[in-house]
Length: 431
Image 1 (cartoon, one colour):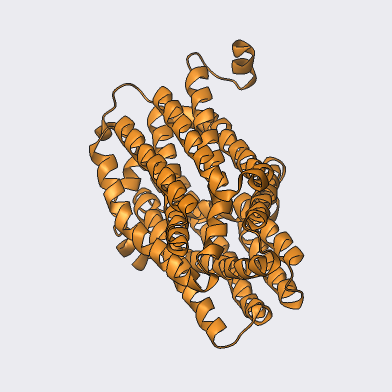
Image 2 (tube, one colour):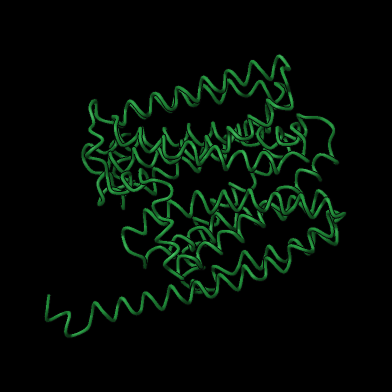
């Protein structure tokens, strides 16, 4: 059977074992995370919807503090050691949260701390996974194998919320934490099977080395490039509108359900629908849509859908409209907007692909979350209700779509310019 599977997926000699362990590694990681994610959303409500702006700011500040320390550790210690210590530390954290939440110790503050912890946890476990993958497989193997390995994560992202949806009514939300801890321990076992018995941090791949750079290393690169600043604006629009919708989601779900397990089940069901739809779109539509419509339109599609969604939510601010809007928005982002956004970096320098992108994906993205959280809170304090806040987001989403079109055109122009340079007679003669 192993031979048939290797033939089916075009695996070469010696690749079946590492690929199978990598598949299982990513499955366990995302399955465990997507058990935690609906619990995090429920903790956001238990910690107080009015306190969410503070929680988003705490997430941003903690990320700024931890990213340099994490990069320092990855640069100086073996990958095996970093994986075991990091994931082991997270397992201990989960068990501590389990005890605190079960005992009802400072429930509001524990809920807020858990929300922040899960938000930062996700950033590091996924980053470390791909760092391990880039160290284990060379560039040629990556092109052949990473799609199959990523499918393990996609499967975990469906099974995780599926388990939460099925089990949360019987076990209650807090009792799912040990299950996530077990999956994280299984991820450690899988990771150790993938990595060599001894590795040297100095031999890490360029992608892994790029993530070690200081989070501020790309700030000057961004400041000097109108193109990179445009990407920052696009990210800020995305994070601001996502935060607006998240805050509205918290209030609508809080008003709709009084039971913690029911709220967690709703969040898990939304994750399940989102991840299933995302996988279907990635398999059947993503590449075709981008090729058929072109990058500018692909970057504008979901922003325009978000504008329509906020308009519908303003007219009918109900749970049903929210759920449909949130699932379509998130699936469209994962399957269309995010891949299209990554294409914007294909025409920048190698240094900017790591330094500038690292700055944009961390400081700009999480900073946008924090700032827009306070903007939503301020507008609410002025007396704007859910419907008015939804209508206020419509012009922002429209501007986001315009930004996407302009960025897509700028990227295409850069690509044509680079193609012209590499095919000019003078350059060909020089080569």
